[in-house]
Amino acid sequence: MGRKRKHSETEAPVPVKKSDESAPERPKRTLLGWKDKSEGEAEKSKALSSSSVFRNKEKVLVTCSRRISYRYRHLMLNMVSLLPHCKKDSKVEAKSSKGATLSELIELKGSSSCLFFECRKHKDLYLWMVKSPAGPSVKFLVNAVHTMEELKLTGNHLKGSRPLLTFSSNFEKDAHWKLLKEMLTQIFGVPKEHRKSKPYHDHVFVFSIVDDHIWFRNYQISVPHNESDKVAKGGLDKMTLIEVGPRFCLNPIKIFGGSFGGPTLYENPFYVSPNQIRALEKRNKAGKFAKKIKAKTRRKMHELSNPLEPDEFADMWKDDK
Image 1 (cartoon, rainbow, N blue to C red):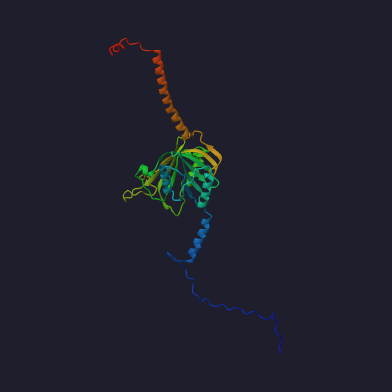
Image 2 (cartoon, rainbow, N blue to C red):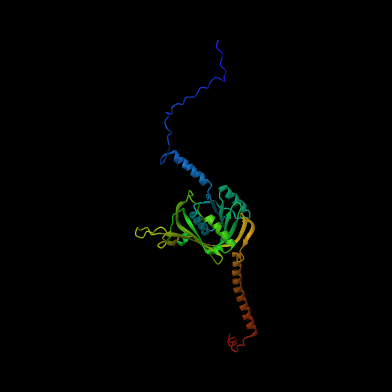
């Protein structure tokens, strides 16, 4: 009988390579046609590289207080139409607890900033400009309000287009102006490639400081469309600015370190509240009334000190009756 072989002596069978006769992988089909594998890999690499780049995801909540007047409500609606990255919400009660309510509302809406229009006594409009949740926040008194409907200007631009922001050189003067410039840039600057915005720059937001007030203007960039008058790239000679509206003036009152409150970072020393101005006007009117009363008393004292002489013909006709 033959001897059995050990397992170690047995050689493992060598696998035979089959010829790859299967069909090549079909490229992915898209709406624009067939997509190659190389293109897909290139897009993946682009997405990975873009994920490390900062992307502006700014969202602004715009709301107002109850019992706001129609003029200030129209101003708020004008701002909503100018900012495609904003979210409008229902009115909020202007109480002492409005800060906590609005902070919670900002978080629920997924926003990072807030413009809150607060109306008091149906006369005075205050604007809260807030970065949430860490702050800072600024409180403004709004003066010289003129809405788009009121002005009826000839300027016009696309709804949802991205604005250019321009600031006067005064914003680099002090630290609080630099902070306000940064907040205005973040809130009024429309993020690139926002889903509700259009990729055009056809209007300008102008912020200028005059007499320690921030004046806001909105201009359309008008370019001639005729072939003969067509503007060359970089040519600004034939471009004109046409005002669109609205107009308003912001008087900064206080800058707080937190959201709707916190430590005071800056307080305007030249600010005079509208209540004090109205009280002075009442005093001036009351002064006019006091002057009239004093004039009457002086007249009476003059008559008493200088009595008229008796008339000799006063009792002439009494005896005939």
